[in-house]
Image (cartoon, rainbow, N blue to C red; front, side, top):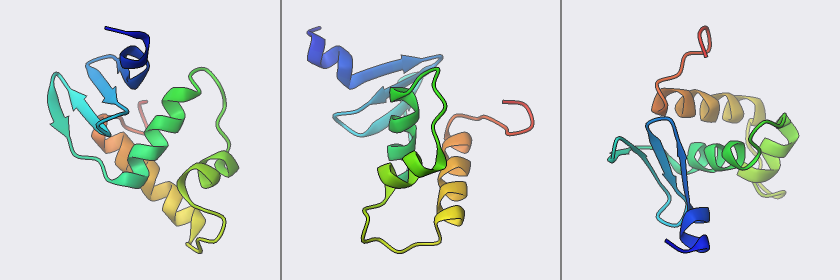
Length: 92
């Protein structure tokens, strides 16, 4: 596997995040994740060990000329990522 392939495939726990194919796999099986939550997961995995601000999330998920209910959109994307990873806010 070359360096580019390694960079395009991130492994954590039982998950693989394939950046090129834009897919999340758990134990080799596809986990459905919509585009915005997928972008959020990519952002979070690229910032391992660092605090990611809501402003950084907004910039990564929406273009400057996009008008959305930002707070609701971020909360929904976080909820979708947690569900995909079988993670609970009460017991992360």
